[in-house]
Image 1 (spheres, protein in one colour):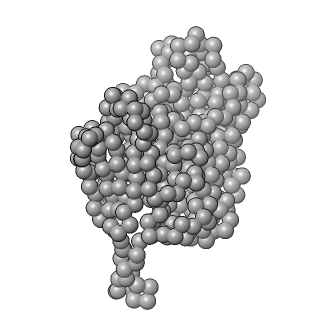
Image 2 (cartoon, rainbow, N blue to C red; image 1 turned 120 degrees about the vertical axis):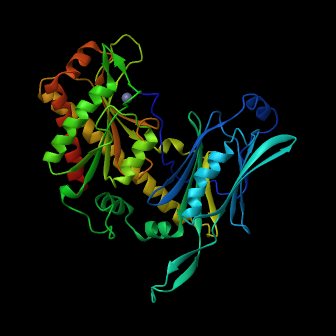
Image 3 (cartoon, rainbow, N blue to C red; image 1 turned 180 degrees about the horizontal axis):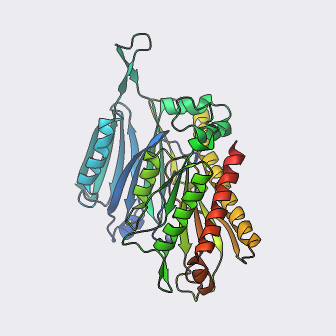
Length: 425
Ligand SMILES: [Zn+2]
């Protein structure tokens, strides 16, 4: 079921906008009209990924902001006109971002309010200029290394999000040194806990697959014919887990019972478990359109949608030369991750539909779909979300309660995952 699912995305790609200073605020009346409805920060999340540290801000209204790099102070200043500290949840923002102070990425965080003509809030991220590393020749010694950062920003509407990715120089070097980026992504898929990413873990037992039964707890998901999506999703997920284990995979469920889990919690869980692959299982709803809609469809996280030649996203450089090849490497890496997830979605969809057809079950193939609201992983691992049928369709609702039918669905998904893993070899 849609709506309840919001994307935690890696917004991708080089937009070509690389000015250090750029006013993203429309002129004059447009602002006044917009700010008749006061913008509020709903939440802020900080996420440390393999390549980048991501800060995501979710607002109630479309976002207008100005950004500026203050080179001497090693600061990134984001100004939000029309807002007050209270609407910006200054305390929460400071708390979340102070995590990055402990990590040594940030030196300071400021949230300031100015009330000249129009009120505005400034969020200032002061990065650490240097970091300490152990001397290669003498492990008892520490050496100071200057920080060089690439900052990618991206904003979107509905949901209204501002996403800031901070790539370290080391992460970028790592990307650039792999001439064949596709190979890197492939090997990375097998070696998330290995120090040497060039050595794929070829055995299935080394792969960790996270199966995510949709919804749970207070969140029922779709409801129809006295059935709840959360219950059916869990039953199918458990069957999927057993079959994958029989095939030799390490499998974990995001929930084993009827418990509440936010999407952020699900994503963080996958990250903590060092998952190689993430598949979410849901049951569809037509949203009260009469129950005619039927069939299976699979979603993957699309990042291409965030590409825009306008002012929706771009890169900022902190003590780093503007270097087109770096941007291309980042761009390529993110594109490859989208393609890998698309491949996973395609294989799950096709094998599931084929398997059901082989069982003489006449299921409609609704195909794969790109989405930014449902498939949610900020972590660059292949991720897909399967809608295994419509709970609002009487025939499919009845089928979905059948134990044998659930097993067939699970087997179709398992075969799709196996096909994907085989293809990655
Ligand atoms: Zn759902």
